[in-house]
Image 1 (spheres, rainbow, N blue to C red):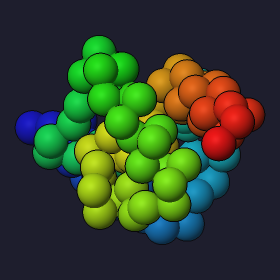
Image 2 (cartoon, helix red, strand yellow):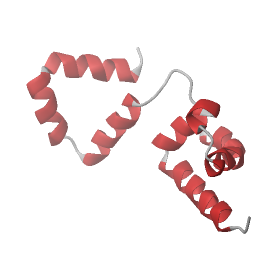
Image 3 (cartoon, helix red, strand yellow):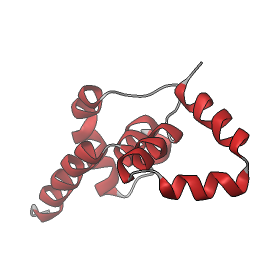
Length: 100
């Protein structure tokens, strides 16, 4: 059983009113972990895979192209991975600062 399914089953058993109260009682790190697990997909890219595609993705975003449509797995990873998002934002700043 996947972790996401296990968490979902557990929260459903607790009931909606208990779920919200108990979630607020959990340590922030655990809440963050649950949030990250909840956002996982069946197909995910690793940080290494994203790193190799990051320059292409950054150029897509800089051009104003639809990154969600062109590189959805990279975009999803950047949405959930703070380290890769930081690297992307740094690359984007450099690209936008460069003369045209």
